[in-house]
Length: 167
Length: 336
Image (cartoon, rainbow over all chains, first blue to last red):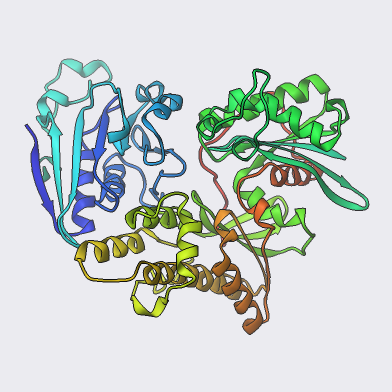
């Protein structure tokens, strides 16, 4: 079941996104739902930081570009379906990109068909500063740790680090 | 020299034939798929939805552009194509098409940056002197450049969230005005009073030349949600004024910082009337030269790609068959 957060500023929304970004691994799909001005792009700014996209890289709205790419510890594909009709989404060929990195999709309401997402996030406007953000998805770090690389795979992996307590 | 320009960086497929000669420059044809009701081999008009399907329209559009220019394909001297920034899947269509033509015709191919092409669109109307400051403002871009020569652009500032044109579009949506948002807001704004509603001027306190328009969108959302009574045309006027003031003030600062007097404003939002009038006023009071390309070359088109490609060619920048596309521009920052 989902967890519901109430953020009191854009900074808090960004921090929540960052905490989620730290847990994502290549191949993860995150679907965002919610109206204009409810904090989706702000959330993705944080998510990008959590994925290691450097501070000096501006994470901007992809509403017109449709797909923005960023270099983090894995590539981030920031998608926005705002301007598209459901039947046009198919032309984007989104799912070919999914295996190459993390994909976060704004206006996921426009998707008719999608691979199973790792997280679904719903955004609701409460007041000028407050947003309700509900997160649906598996949050247990032990189950979602990426595979280790290198010969020490049999070693006990390190315990989940910072960020776990934020969520 | 006859240049065939090809553009497919995002929504629009566009093809143009531009002639550059000793006597000057002439746009022989400039077609944009979504605006042309040309007939495909199997008949019918290309609907707007198909404008995303560059593959389906690019060949017919190219033939139509040549026909309108009264030029044989074999007479083309140079191919110019946008290879970034944009949607990789869309860019690849134009680039592959251009490569094939260049190979088949045994002519040079010049790669063009879409944003640079916007800056140079003014040259389709008249030549201006370098260096100048360029403000590119559209649905997908809002950025200030120092343009030292046709091929040298230095980034001075850019939006940190939404582009100005996107803000127009989204505010129109928040007010249930419809699409496209820019022209609708402008029309309502004509009869509105900007002073009746107080909106923020984002980033004016910040010393850099960056922009931010997301907060302005949120301010409109907050007003709509607050239940306070307001007149829509007043809000449109207030919003348009806020956007114009920010764009103008940052451009003014860029000119001052670089000690320049020449400014070029291009991109889809440069077709906005209030923006043109505000900048014209600024030019008068501050003794500046402000240039706007004709509106038809402000929005995405391939004539600007052809002229930018011509300059790339003259600077020795041609591509081979390995030419790749890129999603994001990497302009050098100024000062370095």
